[in-house]
Amino acid sequence: MIEVQSYLEEIQQAAYENRKLLAVLVDPDKFDENSISEFIQNLPKETTHIFVGGSTVEEGRTCAVVKAFKNLCGLPIILFPGDHSQISSHADALLFLSLISGRNPEFLIEQQVRSVKKIRNTSLEIIPTGYILIDGGRETSVQKVSNTVPLAQSNLQQIVNTALAGQYSGKKLIYLEAGSGANNPVSSEIISSVKNELNIPVIVGGGIRSTQQLLEAYNAGADLVVIGTAFENGSFQQ
Image 1 (cartoon, one colour):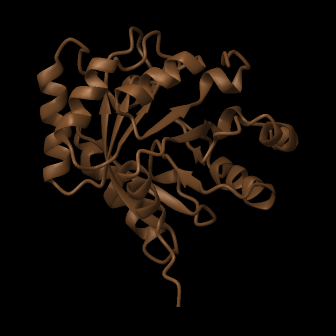
Image 2 (cartoon, one colour; image 1 turned 90 degrees about the vertical axis):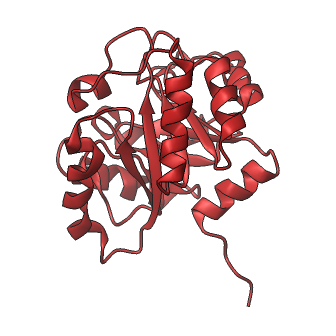
Image 3 (cartoon, helix red, strand yellow; image 1 turned 120 degrees about the vertical axis):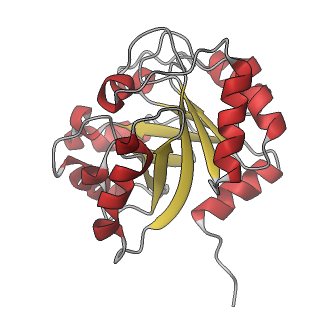
């Protein structure tokens, strides 16, 4: 029997082989299922994953969007939830996020505890992920909803130490996030410094608006890059 890799193992294997991955993030509250066919057709050919989630999402919207994608798209659908209400059993996997850059227990452990009832009897693959919010030059929805302060991009050692703390505490992925619509993406220096210290894959998102910025993130060491707002509003420069 051929052993099928888990979604985490696929990401880990790609990182080991230096194959770069690309996820397009879909915010359910901003997505029109009637345009899904066109949306899928316009995905960058390099796209490997669809992430679904947002800082605040109306009840039931995540499930509706995930179902729509599962019907028409063969890519893995991975949940990137802002809270426990955004969990859908119809997705393939769940980034089990802990906002380790903040000190608000609501997003360090409370939301995770509330989610257990929803996920324990599903077939979702649960991927423990350390989520680090980094200052992108403007107040983002994540900052407002989580009531946490992002780490300054100049505070390089604190960011590296936070990422290492996530790895030491058992996280399987580290997600460096500048926030949706950030003015400034996570810098190459931060990405390379974090990547050099970790032995788990690094995801980078927020404020990436062009192929050039995408390549810069890859070259700095990002294993998986997430684009969202710029692709949604048609401003992504290829």
